[in-house]
Length: 271
Length: 299
Image (cartoon, rainbow over all chains, first blue to last red; front, top):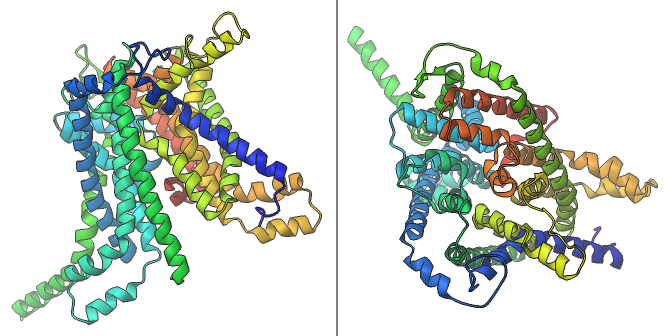
């Protein structure tokens, strides 16, 4: 392996380079966390430590409403895309049928097309069909860009799938529904989990699609921030962001640690 | 006789339907959804790009090519130029940072690899607008960089680091870098090391080996990453809003304005068709050179 052959100089260079990349990625996050504890309202210099902004944040109903909206849209669109996407992945993996390539092509469109194009296309069709713009239109729009990602992650999981397990269950008298719920779903569960996490993440961070498909009363957190940018983002938004950062860091690090230990355990038992 | 035939036919249909039932339950939801919410909307955008508007900004369904004629307006041409320049620079810088980073990651131990991947993706669970706003505090005229440089006495006047192309490109690279790293990382991981050893055994120096063996073998990853960076960079209007402060207009900004402020949907639709064509051409070139579509969704 190249690793063992690396000289000390090369190793130092690699570490320094990686450190710079991470500095680039984390510098603005550090700024947000720091300024959420800043006594000054203007986010320019750090004047002193305070926890006041966390209280202000909790009392800011507009901000809290936008957070609730974000979570509603993300949960509902994730649920929808997981159901539709997982069924599709299994169906498209198991059966060869006419039109399969066409569905595949449709699924790739949201992945490669600029979000602004998808956003205006959905807005146009919602207005044509008189769908009122609000939480429901945003849920539909978010599910639309999430479904392909769920299909792809579940499909990746299925490529190592042993069809004989399903056949054995059928031979032992299980019906299709039992086979699906007892055999297929548990087997693809990690793929579904990864797809759900991806769908949720894409939804809570989405700006462009929401920008076009939202209504006047259904502001999400990213849109709220976008609106505040002109007048200046107040530190209570930093406080909320800090809480979101801490929660996601905890969730991601724990889930990755579990996954890593699980993989390691599998390597040891040789399965 | 006829009735027996009919029972046979319905029996045959029922059996076929029964066999197709699981396929239909699994595949029809996604088909209906994607047709109604992807195919129909895009066809409708193409349709309204040939329409015009009345004084009340309503779409008038009468065929016209005026929206396409307006695409060649000189101010718009400079916006395309700007847009392509910024997307191109974003792509190039992402490769220059992402390629070595992906190499280092792929050559690390499995534990370190997982760790590097997690910390690469972690920032993306935080709202990107907020993170870009953090950059404004770093780059602003009273920001971190200017304060440090001034207190060191290196500059007397604050440097204008925000509200220019530089800031927009920085913001784009910041938001899009992982999309470059991931596909490159995937191909480097799959790289056949015996080919590299063969090159070394045959006397190739490291630089030559990289140019003649490693780079061609990993070019599909660079191509996939470039598509995932270049195309969004043409449309991410919020990055140019935040970091460019109106000094930098991208195609995405013009489209957004047609739909939300100017209410000239047909013209915005024609601009969107331009973006769709650019996307199709790039993706076609990618698959023609052997790129796999699945590698584009490698998130």
